[in-house]
Amino acid sequence: YPLYAEATNEKGLSIGALNFPNNAYYTEAKEGKINITPFELIPWILGKFANIEELKGVIENINLINIPFKEDMPLTPLHWMISYQNENIVLEQTKEGLKIYDNPIGVLTNNPEFSFHLTNINNYLNLTPDVPQNRFSDEISLKIYGKGMGAIGLPGDNSSTSRFIRAAFNKTNSVCDEDEESSVSQVFHILDSVAMIRGTNVNENDKYDITAYSCCINTTKGIYYYKTYENNQMTAIEMNENNMNSSKLYIHELIEKQQINRTDN
Image (cartoon, rainbow, N blue to C red; front, top):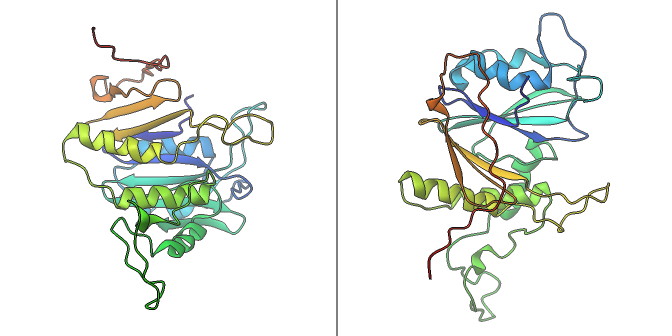
């Protein structure tokens, strides 16, 4: 039974699951609710709905229940970002109940709750990709001495709140050509700006947190692009080349060895 971190269906409806420790709350089954385990949520939604509009009529009745995948594999605390074309929502279930947010930013990281991220981003409303103007004082002559000073204050640490702001700033100010290669390249530049580098974040178990892989999906053409920590060359999987009506699980082995395009002397 596949466990999905992110997925898209043939209609272009897509879901990404992100870690949500100490906030995610799973309950017992409730009568009159659509009782689903967290690991069933992605295939259930993508198997039944073509877009967010269809999902909105049902999603409020979902109840995420506390049934582990198996005894030695407890449930992961998660929240989800669901996207279709230019529409985006976030789904969280906490002790206060199920929460569904419209997500105009199109970004999600981890803790705290999404409502915090929506409030916290207001602290950075003065950031700009443009040349900044002196607002400090009319009495002091201040001038820029380098490029990018309009974004001074953009957080650079690995916390989820800082990565949310950084991803949001880079995404919403991103400019690229409209062809496929340029768009894919730009997405990975944005993802690289919030990637964790080995050694820069040590967790409670004295292990290094890293961005094990990054990916993006062309939901119209059904192309899955990815790169791994060890191999930063993009790999493309043409998902529509597989039989969409088959019950077979198609598996593509990760290309993890670094690929270097060497030129002849």
